[in-house]
Structure formats: structure tokens, C-alpha cells
Length: 559
Image 1 (spheres, one colour):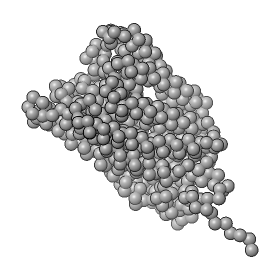
Image 2 (image 1 turned 135 degrees about the vertical axis):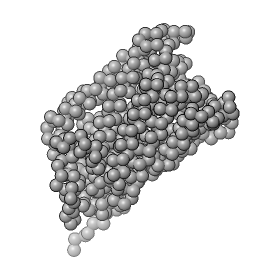
Image 3 (image 1 turned 135 degrees about the horizontal axis):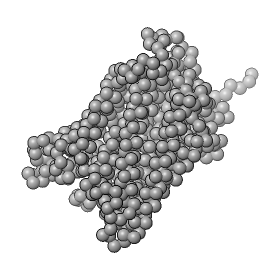
Image 4 (image 1 turned 90 degrees about the vertical axis):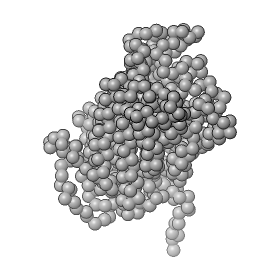
């Protein structure tokens, strides 16, 4: 990378550092700086993550012993419903794109800001507005499950209408962010930053933005129909007046399986950025990872039916969806192979970001291999709606999206805050989190294989109640270790942001464009618009006979 350009000035270039709070809350609320908007998203989502996590602990504590313990059945239904709604719609779906994506995308492509800064600010305002409706659903005691399945969602109209309105409004925030990112990547790349030099996190963000723009309107229409169904009883999903509740499942999952990759693809992009830096090797198979990201986004629209193998469909359709579900694993496996190949024979440095990145690979492999059981028709019939699905889902989302977000927060923390966290403390927190997570959800695979249904508040009437109680006890104990790990991470990062040792511009000696600016970056990101002369993964390439496209380097021979 080089910065040989004409100096660019802007009326904001003399503004105070974006981390400055002297002008008060309104200076942040009205800001159009992508860095401040990313941080506001981050703080908001950590707040919702904490609430969702506390609800999860309530659910696990209730299940620790047979019979009713700390809450009754109705409260249990509300707790797991709100845990899902808050975690999915307020934390996971906006997740990496709204936080790290907002902060890093302009920096990584050499731009001053996103293409539409005011639209970016509006997306955050819409997000906050939608969150109020989500909490209104708490007041009305939402208890349908986060999927809002009909006919459950046709009984408590005020709660369902509040929750669906929340998801509907939050969808607009997602669409606005996706449109902004697409235009930014297409139109605002620095000179020389061609598509075959684009950072892999940017490619992952690009694929995610496509999904946000294309898929989100589907769930918007679906939730609007559900809202109207509750308000006027129009008979779209209500079976007693000619509606079809299975239609809701088709519409819901047509969006909700692509949204899994809205959650996962950015985390994959983070891992693709971290592993080369701490392996000191070029990323293996750059183009394969790029095409795998685009391929995952495309195929994700064709596999929604595997959620409905037991809902009633022809054998041919079952076979088709089963095949397509197996097929979507191919581009995912390509990424895993490339990550492992990058680490192989590298000069690996086990920093906390690298530990999170390697944990992501390990945990997501468990998610993928257990997903095979749910893509197989015979085993899915047994595992459907059991704790096997709960465990698989959490290995995908928590072990994938959340661990990926934490990897990114640790990696880019010095750039975001200009300070360093305590590395030793970070590794201790990582160990607690990793042990707690696996101890929580591995027993749930066994529970599912033994037939324990999910969403049950009590299991005392089952014949194998003793085994269920033993496994639930283990899962609950480790869930508290998991929560402790997450809490220590947040404490460490929070303290580091305020009191940590000041960071240098590039503490990891990374080649990424975002590391070529001061830490924290100035208002306009770069003093001069950078000119890109090579890709950002050339670690050790000076010893290679080929460039990153596989072409043999031309070496001038002496006269």
C-alpha cells in the first residue's frame, strides 16, 4: 500500500476526535461519522446481548432440576421467546455489519466515509425505534417463540403485533445498511483497489449486503401479513377461516435461512483477515474464498425447506432440499480448508484474536458436521424440534457469529479506541468462554439424541428423567461459566478502552489499509486518499516466485 496522493481537505478535518464526549450525547446522536455510528450500534447491541444472555440464564436455571423451580410455565415461555427475539433481531442480525462493518468498511477501502452518511445515521435511528417495539412486546407478554409460528402467533394479538412491528422496522435498518454498503464498495474504493485486491472482510460484507437487500423484504411482507392477520383476521395464516399456517413457515424460512449467512458471512470475513496476520503467510486460495462467499449467498436462498421436512411435503421436494442443503456445505468447506492451509507451516502467534479465530473454525466445523444430521431425511425426523437442533443452532450462531464478532473486536480494538486491552486477561476470559460454551451445548446434543424436546419447561414425566436432569444440570453449570467468560471479555475491553496503554498505529504489523492510519483514525480516516499498489495479504511474498494471482514473477536479469 502507498499513500502518494494529493492532500484532501474537508471542512470537518479539524473536528475533535470521534471518541470525544465533550460536546455531549447529542453530538453523537446527530453525528454522520461512520465510526461513531458503528460504536453506537456496538454499545446498543452489547446492551441487548446482556439482556438476552440474562434471559438465557433464567431458562437454563429453570431446567437445572426437574419440576417447576424458579418460574412457572407461562413465564418460561416468555423468557425463551424474548431471549430469541432479542438475540436474533436486536443483536445477531445487525451484528458485525452494523458494528465493525460500519467502522471498518470505509477504512479498508480507502474512503472518507460510507456513500450515504445521513442514510447511515437514519439506519441507526430506525434500529433504536424498532427496539422500543420489541420491549413493548415484553409488556404484553410475548410467548410464541421467536419464529412467530401460526397458530401460536394468532392468540395474543397485542404482543405479536408489537414484536412483528419491531422486526418489521428493524428490517428497514438492515436494508438501509445493505444498500449503503453496496454503493460504498462499488463507488468509493481507493485508486488501485481493484476487485481482486479487495480485502476478504469487504467481500464478506458485500455478500452480506446483497442478502440484506434481497432477503429482508420477504420477511417484511410476511410480518406485515401476520400483523394484518392479528388486526383484522383476514385469513392468510388462520386455518379456521381458510388460511394456511404452513405458508407462514415457507415465507419465514425463505428469509430466515439466508439470514443465517447474514450472521455468519461477516464473521467468516473477520477470520479471513486475522489468520494471515498471525500466521505471517498470505491467505491460501484468495479467489476461492471470494467465490465461496458469493456462492454461499446464492445457494442460501434454495435450502429453506430443510426446516420443514416434517411439515408435509412430497418425497421429491424432500430429496431436493436435502441435496441442496448438503451442497451449501461445499463453499463453506472450501473456506475451512483455506484457513487451515493458511495456518499450516505458518509462524503462528497465539494472540487473543488468533485464539478466537481458531475457535471459530473449530466450533463452526461442529456446527457444520451436526448440520449434516439435520439435512439427512431419516435422522432429521428424529432430531427435529429436539435439543439437538438447539445445540446445532447455538454452535452456528454463538460459536460462529458471536465468536467471530469477539475475534474482530479484539483484533481491531487498538484501531477503534487507540488503546490496548490486557492480553493476559483476554486469554483467561477466552478460556472460560470456550470451556463454558462447549460444556453448555455438547450435553444438549445428547439430550436431543435421547428425544428431549426443546421449549419444554419440565421433563419430569419422561421415562429417562434421571438422565435428562443430569445432562441439564451439567449444561446449566457450564452456562454460568460461559456467562462469566463473556462478562470478563466485556470488562477487559471496557477498561482497555478507557485506561488501556496507548496503541501504535499498527501493533500487529498488518498490511491492511485500515492499519495505515493513526490509532484512533482521524475524522476523514486518511490525511491523503491512498493509492493501492498490491493486495493486503502479502506476508512473506518477498520469498515467493509467484504473485497472489498465481502468476510467475518477472525478474529482470543482470546485463
